[in-house]
Length: 278
Image 1 (cartoon, rainbow, N blue to C red):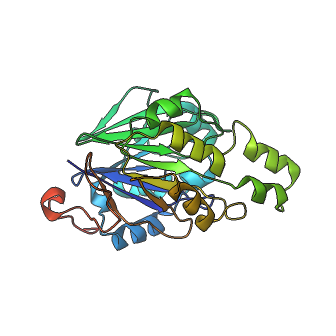
Image 2: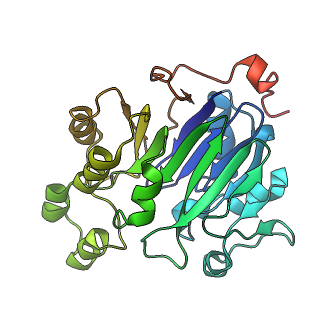
């Protein structure tokens, strides 16, 4: 009754999140090259053969850089809204680009993926909830403010990738020009550490075993700072920072289980003897 999750990369240089049940998996965004995605999954002993679909949150380059090659090489459907596809400039083969509707679950084998609108400076941005085996995983990144949709779904997650993009003081005193600081802080920009912590402390469900702090700014945040900030309020929830330079561990998420610290990989019995890039 588990799902397995990992961040392959998280940051303005590329975003890609793996969620699977041991038989099939999806990638939320594909902001790494195909080759780098393959390398990182292989190091984690995860198989691209089990990835059955890509889901795209919005058109910014750090979320779509690898889409065309990955989709073509592995003949994967790409779930993307029409507005996002138009704005992205992606060239995807006929029949591979599939639309989705907000709040309408898409079934991928034993997984169910539900998109919901969010606030971000993109054509038609969405975030996703992935459910399977009685477990719910949320991907809450590239969000300017925690709107009603975000809080509604966050309250029911067993694990979440949660954006903590910037420290307010570091952004204020940093080198970014004023217009860019204003954009980042806006309701269509990114969540600060304090905004993310407020969402976490006010709406974290008792069943949330893991939070992966995601999409940290290279210049305006510190992994140590945000880890310590959340750890003080985390209780039994395991806190880790999703790196912008390397993949995370694979975490096993199961309702009611003790927080896994990242040693888990899909067991052979659950994964049907995972093959590595056959």
